[in-house]
Image (cartoon, rainbow, N blue to C red; front, side, top):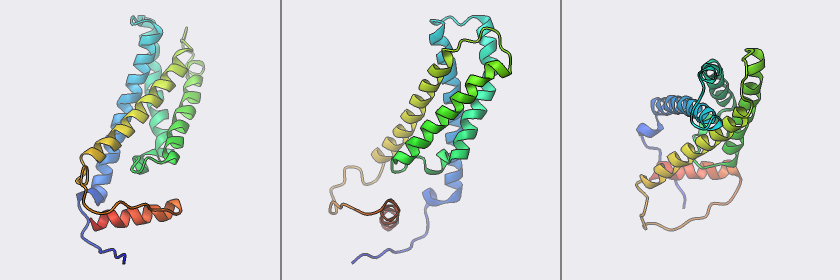
Length: 178
């Protein structure tokens, strides 16, 4: 017998909480894009970035941040936050990096930057993807570890089979019940 009892939503289910999480995720991604771009230049120039290249970095960085975060917002990356670690989320994240890198590749020509190192473009994309995936999986792992059910042996193990939407519905209902 499967019943779902409706209870008052907790803090985690409130729209305010979701908004705070999304703002934190966007702010984190801005910091990650900055770090990826800086590290890409750092690696390209073996730890000593010349002053003219620092000015190139400063010129492209605002655009790069807008490209990455804007595309992520458009593709809905911040809507799921990898709650279930779906492949769809990973594809969206790869799309953000690929489209952002294509736009990034056009910046040196549009801004007419002298001697812009082209090797920085793929290096920054790889670092951005690595940072994005690492943080999202880290947040998911932290959620699993800090969960009240972590290590609990109460209850029976259950396999839920069916379509993706059906499984999500059952999982949400089970989460609300506990």
